[in-house]
Amino acid sequence: MLSSGWGRYPGIETTAHQPATRTALCRVLASTPASLIARGMGRSYGDASLAAHSVVMTRLDHFIAFDAEAGTLECSAGVTLSAILAVVVPRGWFLPVLPGTGFVTLGGAIAADVHGKNHHHDGSFSQYVDDITLLLADGSILRCSRHEHADLFHASAGGMGLTGIIVAARLRLRAITNSYIDERLLAAPDLDTTLALLTQHEQSTYVVAWLDVNQSGARRGRGIVMLGEHAATGGLETDCRRPLSVPLDMPAWLLGRPVTRAFNALYYARGARNADSHRVHYANYFFPLDALNDWNRLYGRRGFLQHQCVLPPAGAREALGEILRSVTASGLVSPLAVLKGFGAGNDNLLSFPQDGLTLTMDFAHSADSLALCVRLDDIVVAHGGRLYLAKDAAMSAATFRAGYPHWQRFQEVREKYRALGRFASLQSQRLGL
Image (cartoon, rainbow, N blue to C red; front, side):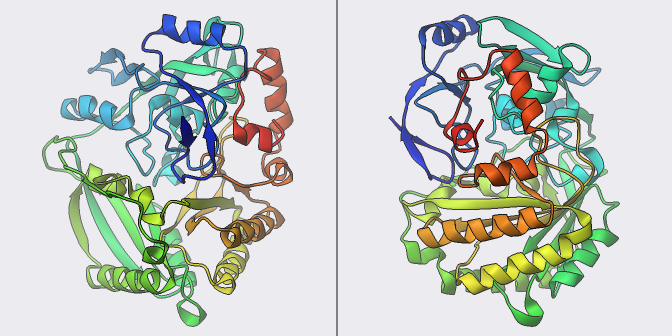
């Protein structure tokens, strides 16, 4: 079968194994002589979950133990974050860190060490994971944590499935009184104002800015800063939306320059007009795109590239200016761009977040957008930044090594647990891992 990531580029013919039990999972590993990679819902954007043999974990979606008094949960790796929320929210608990979609498996969230709008306060997903159960290359199953087999824990959290197959995990939840978020919108007419507002409101629990990267001159970098706090009152309803669907691949012009610029102008005007506080359900706040199934089809059959970088504080303003000017000069447009602040990184060897600013942009896939991403990568590396492995489809091995200084230590841990050559993806091969 032809398989791809969420960006639909690149694609590969793969044999997909779909075990429903741990015993079946072990049989797949034992009977597959070639290298393989675990795959969840396929929401990594590029080629991180692509290989000639993939182990699709979505049938391993079992809840193992839930302590509703202490707020601890143990699940199999194939359980999605949305499914977890559906169980724990009515009981007054919440996931401490959420990415931009609930259609991510627990195993995928750990493998990518996903982050959210609150990283500046609360860090990334793995910081609330107490231990991980891994299927190793020799067929044994091992539980690792910060206190037991710590080297394997810190290589696996953020390790993109390259140390072994995550089978299950235990994590800590956050107590809530309701399922609503009080959101406040602030309009910023240019990049400097956007940055100033992000800094001014960094005490807010959730902070993110939608950015219009398709403007030039005085309006370059204008945005809508979105602040969020857990509401004090309200019910404990879960996500009851009925998603719409994109029925077919859209024509390329739909997200071309005229339409994208017009949409961004309307979005900015709407945000500026509604710059006040309002209450929204957590699903609408954290997962707005989940209301539209198969939204990646909006980019057409050729798919899209998502470029996400993090830039250290010292040179972030200069680097952002260079990036936005490069986008303008390319003539390409990004229908979606997000800017937010990160706090300190953690001890995981390949986790993406580090202190600074992270910018995310989408570009329809083409030779021109691939060339633009190379230019953007050079800017990021020159300013001491790095790219997010879960979004990457094109970075070079040199760019990876410049951004992830612990990559050799990561390889040593993989060698210790005999993962080298056994767990591999198109991405790991491209990056020299």
